[in-house]
Image (cartoon, rainbow, N blue to C red; front, top):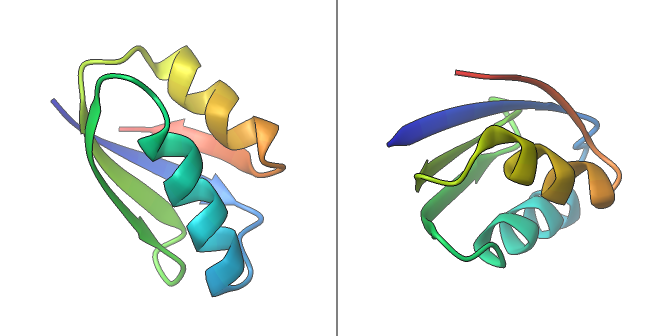
Length: 67
């Protein structure tokens, strides 16, 4: 399932790398694309939203919504 995670707090490519690494570290997340300009991450996964939110927020960023 494709999920779009809207994220606040990313300000540079270093931030993008942190979010991408956090999401890729979750078992069950297959594809990760993070966009600084779009302020989002697109993932292909069946992992529940709480797991995704926790991984991102542990890195210091805010999840606004998941579509």
